[in-house]
Length: 321
Image (tube, rainbow, N blue to C red; front, side, top):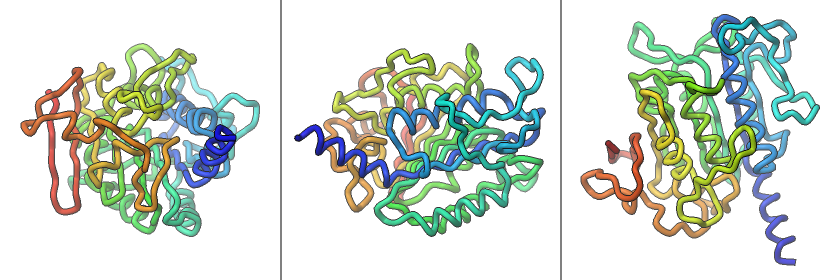
C-alpha cells in the first residue's frame, strides 16, 4: 500500500514538470550530429528514467520533421535527416523546426498552461556567438538568431514555481547572466567568454553529456553512473553539476547560478516540491556552505567549475581551483 501511494505521488508530481528542448542548428553545415545525440539523451532521460509525460515535452530541433538531410554526421561523413524518434521506442516524436516563430508560439502556449504548481526544465544546445554590439546570440534554424536579452524577455512571461535551465552552447555563461532570476537554476557548460566543447571520444557535447549521465544515473550504453553524493536516493541539480564538472575533460569552466540558496541542492526530477518551489525532501550536507569554506576553498573531493549563488540583489561567487 505504501509503495503504491509513493508511486502515485511520484506520477502526480511528474505531471507538473514540463520541458522545452531547443537545438537550432543554424544550417546543415553547422548542425552537428552531437546536438541530436544531446537532445535524444536528455529526452530519453526525461521520458524513461523520470516518466515525464510526452505531452509535457516540446522539441524544437533544426528543421523539425522535414525529411531533408539537415544533420552533419560526426567526422563530416555526409548528411542525414533529423530522426524524430528520439528515444528509440518506434514512435515518432512531434518535432518542430527551431525557428523564432515556433519558439515564440511555444513560450506563449506555456504561458497559458504553466501554473505556480508547475516546474519548467529548458535545455539549449547548438551554437552561441558573440555579436558586434557585445551581446551574445543563439543560432536557430535557417539563419535566424535570438540574443540572450531577447530570450530572457520571452521567458519573462512564464510564471512556473521554478525554472531549471541547462545551457550547452558556446558563451553559455553570458546567456546565464541574462536568464538568471529568483526561483531559477541556470547551469552553463562554459563561462561568458568561453567556447563549449564536444567530447573527445563520442558524438556528444562534453559537459552536457556528463550532466545527463549524472541525472539519468547511467551513460548512453546503460552503464551505471553514481552522482548521488549524499545517498538520499535523488540526484539534485547541484550534484549533477558537481559530477559533470568533475568529469569535464575540456578547456571550459562550467557554471551554476541559483536563486535562492537551497534550490539547486533540493531540486531533482523525482523530488517533491513545496509551494515555494523548493523541494521538501531532506538534504543533509547539501548547502553550498557545507561544500566550500568562506574563502571558496574546496571541501571534500576534487571538483572544478564556478558556482554563483545569487540572492536577489546580492551575489556570492565561489571559485573552485
